[in-house]
Length: 394
Ligand SMILES: [Zn+2]
Image 1: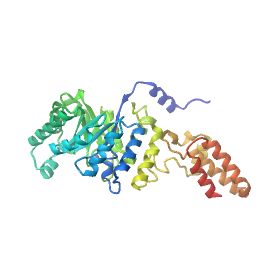
Image 2: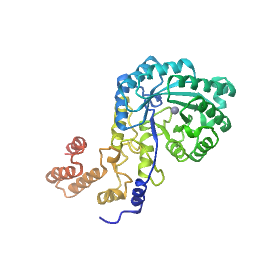
Image 3: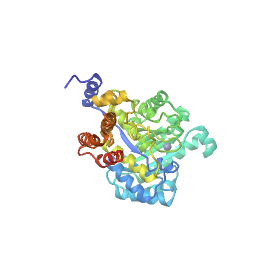
Image 4: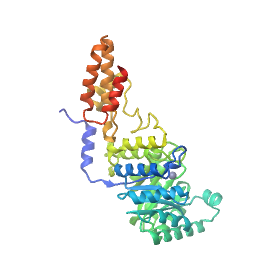
């Protein structure tokens, strides 16, 4: 073997160092399900919840139990069937919501009630029609009530990034005092930018009394395409939970994408020295299952899970990848469970081209392709799909 490239050495050194654990809170079944065309019924949600369990996420937000009877039954079924991760249910900051959430969650092995209340002036004034003082009081009482039912209570000040920071800290301090164990900071409208969001997390860590005893979380929307960058900035500033979804689905432009957050930490441990419990090889199966259930395809150029994420079109790239995949790839597709190994694709393309060039396609193609294919993907789940392509070409 030659000398290991500088960037690999650096990554390997960092990999062996102690890294902070980031809790992956998956909200595909709640926030994700709110995106148009992505609603799921109970059996579909259960199937996806089992896949999220295999994927190794720490928390599954299973739904919003008071929203509908269907949502309630789904949360209840997931709480009963999926026993390893924490199962969270969403509730507005009022008694009926919290009671309904608890009713659905109470038999979970590890239940969590997630209470939210908007804190920005625009939401208080126009949506909730309450004063700041009323907001603090309502948040405090809701958390106290949730805490009387469940030890694990998360609070989200909705529209936190458009909330006046002093007031945000005041609300957060009140809910910490009332027993919240996780403080989730949502960029509900996808408005913030990385440096600003990192500063906000720092401000919260500096100002909120009792913050050292709770977990800070980030929940970022992608309206300006910065959800993942914002989530990672929050982590760098001290957040230890990231809320995200498979394929980045969610309200409007979606949420931070789970696979992008996780793979950014794995490919760049020199910049993001954190670890998660996510099983890389289960990322692609999770993405595919979600698409299959919702009928919503993944955009082809989607990072990590899109069908072009590891495809090389330009000849110069194919040539490089054939000689050494690392020339044009920063990670191998199988790290995220992607079955279309690009070098296998590139090899097949190259063989096909030379077969055509030599004008002996009929005699050489099948044997050459089959050799390339066998060498490239022996024992991998790609066998049947790759054969389909080879057969097509013949
Ligand atoms: Zn959201």
